[in-house]
Image 1: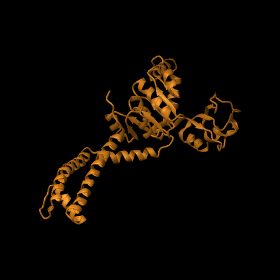
Image 2 (image 1 turned 120 degrees about the vertical axis):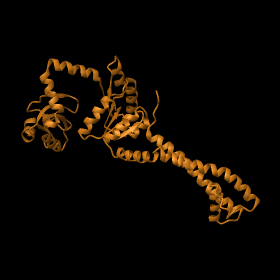
Image 3 (image 1 turned 135 degrees about the vertical axis):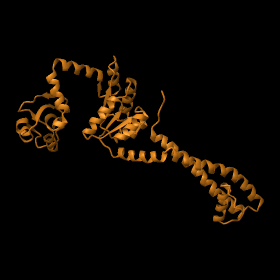
Length: 342
């Protein structure tokens, strides 16, 4: 398999080469200048002028070396400098033609965007599943970075104006570039279980507290290996798809209701989870006294305790505690108002 290195490192390599060539170029210029000052007793500017017309092979004839040592020095300067000048301008032209400078500016702009991100998500792989995840996160206004190595997919990411990093998601440098140390979650949805396993291992090592959601093909033992590697959750799209198809056959109305609650944003309906803060007006109150239904007209479907216990269809006397996560159903604007109060 061909290994595509991140664009960022390709650009750095090109810039380093150009910097080395330019350094050698200026060494030749100033070396020639001081050489003529010593051997031909010229002034600084005359020495530089003589050096430049020598290595450029212009030779106006208005200033030439007189002393034997100066003539020998000129011979070496021509051989050393003329080739370097041609190589330098060739390298500059190459960088300009290949668009490296434009890529440098684009990459720096992207790096600045990533540097400003906190508590964002990292999507590893922009295939069919990655595209859907990106679309949903974008619609929800959640910040995310996509790591992808395929050039065609990278162009699509540019067209969508998504923040992206080019390279292998299993490499430390690529994940660090994507801001994994500041991220709140990573989704490994590349094409193979082995790649998702390597990504999970690397990500867990770089950020021990990171929430990692990994895709599984459903093969025997894959889920166990991914969990052992550090995945927080493992999802098999094939298993979920099969369950959904079966539910559509057995409980079509229930499935329609869940779809309406989860994906009917255009109808204003929304199923959301809300973290209860210490400062929330309804913290340390029971559900009836909280006024959530009366003030916001939303339904509290379930409450997840800080310890992980899930309370479905909580009773009116159920206490709402700081650190709880409430799962609520209601109109989008009402839930937004409730989130501000939480």
